[in-house]
Length: 52
Image 1 (cartoon, helix red, strand yellow):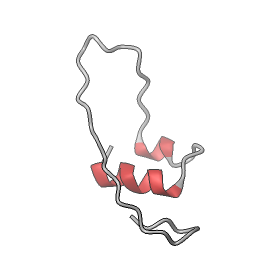
Image 2: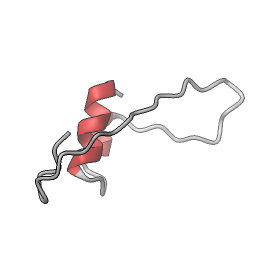
Image 3: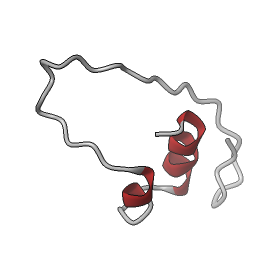
Image 4: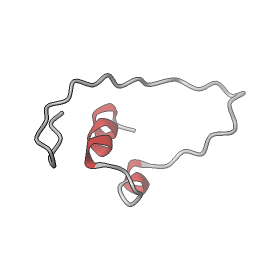
């Protein structure tokens, strides 16, 4: 990814964890809902990459 404000190129690792039924303390949001929250553009690029 390239950070749009500073123009730095970032090498990042994105991890995706499959949750079991016993993990019920999490609240999930759709990608559409996440687009309106206070996330960086870089975070949204990562979420779109893993297609949440």
